[in-house]
Image 1 (cartoon, rainbow, N blue to C red):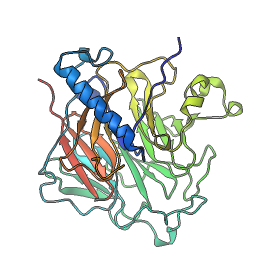
Image 2 (cartoon, one colour):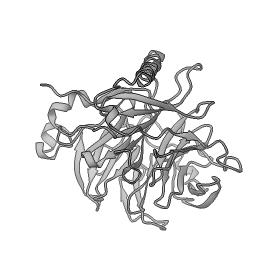
Image 3 (cartoon, rainbow, N blue to C red):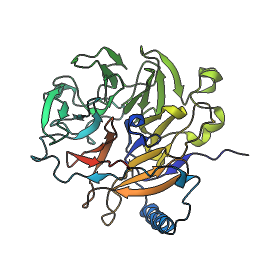
Length: 380
């Protein structure tokens, strides 16, 4: 029997994976930026939500084994956060949550990512303006949203994503520099740099506008080399390349491929924009932006999501009469099971993160430049 292909064609801008609905197992990463879907898809999603709500009310099953798992927390916006109004931020490209539960944002200051930022060969056009002079990495107070500390001035040219791993290291991608940086806790100089400065390329030592990083508890590193190369690379903790997807037949032995050859044709990517790990299942979630979908190819081809593994997602703008809102997705049944967001909707979300204890979810926006906080009430 042929295996069912595991992907959603969906208008999603950010995903957050929660494994087993247990706070200490949640992986605080975003899978972001899947653009430009038709309003017909939203009509189908609304119809699906209405149908599933009616099925819940009648006590009917809503998908394979769905009722056997605890319901995911419904994100509830905190209307008074930030308490003293939004802090002065540029485009908020990324948000992560530190091990102590404090949200950390990676923003662009006065610099704007637009059609004048890069040339046709993907070289950054504003090098002569120098690095961003403001602190680009800001830690916020989880209670009131105030800026507590900042660093990163005169280091970055075009911030894109931020990841904080289980050891407290901060990983940052800069699409202008075409590099990925690792910073130890409390450090302001990187102890690991991947890619070549201002040198876009497709070799094994180069990136072309890398979009995101996911880090396993083993220290293995996954990089979405998104805008130009449309590939995902896996490194050991020291930054030695282990695997690359996709890879040509004559470039690597079959045993080193990230996913099996059988899956390649259906999983050719166009702008893998962000990543999230389902480590317990040995899976990586990839936001395949221009293919309008989210995929999660298991390295061995066999593991399947199980009831209780959920994904929080945010869609992008498609039409004036459709709110930009959030969804909760169930990988086991490939279903939309909830929707959430502020009453007025969002405008241009770009990143999602959740606190290590699973009590709060944050959404970063690019225009207006702000961060939303949502409570995640846990079931009694």
